[in-house]
Amino acid sequence: TMVRLLGGHMIAAGDIFRSFKDDPELQQIMAAGANVPSETFARIVLPYFSRPDFAGEPLILSGVGRKNGEQQVIVRAAEEADHPLKAVILLDIPNTVVMERYQMSLGSRDRGERLDDGDQAIIASRLEHFAIDVVPVIDYYRQHGLLIEVDGSQSAEEVIIAIINGLLLSKRI
Image 1 (cartoon, rainbow, N blue to C red):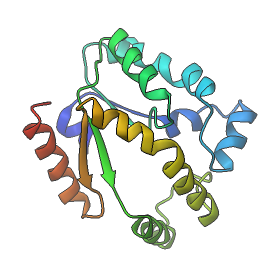
Image 2: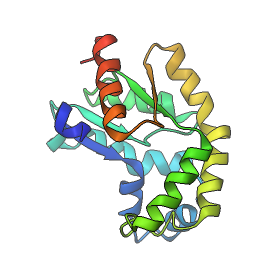
Image 3: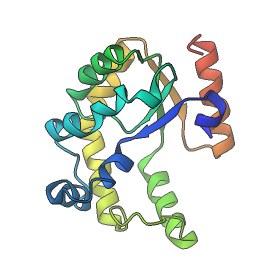
Image 4: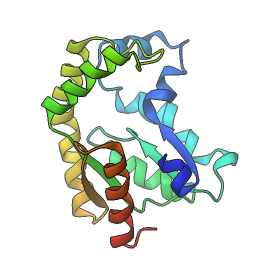
């Protein structure tokens, strides 16, 4: 939806990682619900920024550079690929809501082919990693004036409206 509204291309780290099925170490890390090591992240994800089909178009990053220390790599790589960061959206969702939505997704069977998050323990592990690894990244983007915080516990339509309003109010689009 955001890609249609803003144009450009979506780069989701999870989708990129899942496409590397011939990398057993990477697949094992993902199956355990752990964060991908920074070196592996840089080797696999960052070359995507410079792909010719992305030239001159906005990139919408999802879950890219969430681990502390990767944010500087993302900023530099985005600038070098002529895609400087304009904003970072934080969907603030309480853990209880995350788990409720996960349970609902199981009931509706909308997990698709994603087996790497098919277990409640994996989701809990990811939430733990978030608290440890991602909060410093959020602080970095906040300190650099790039962070736009949105209440992600709202309906999907309300979240999209809040994101667009945040981008407009911050004069980022």
